[in-house]
Length: 102
Image (cartoon, rainbow, N blue to C red; front, side):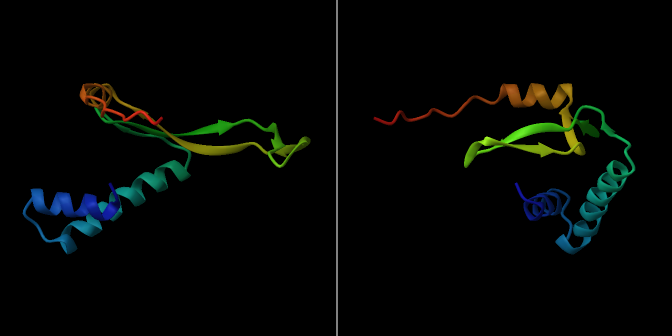
């Protein structure tokens, strides 16, 4: 799903024009981004939590030359933890059948 798909779905479900829904969706995303940029978390009961975590500095290897070690600096990263209701809905979806390749 893309942002445009989300806007289309909301507009259709609420019988509204896309141009009226777009600023609301944009503001929701901007609010979440602004809150995370301040280092705070966004909690949506039943859906999940967006938060910022610290990722420690570490050493990595260059895939083209595994003998070279590269230092990867510490940084902050956004993470999402799904809520109980979201987890239950995802678990209720039956997996698609996969076709085995020969």
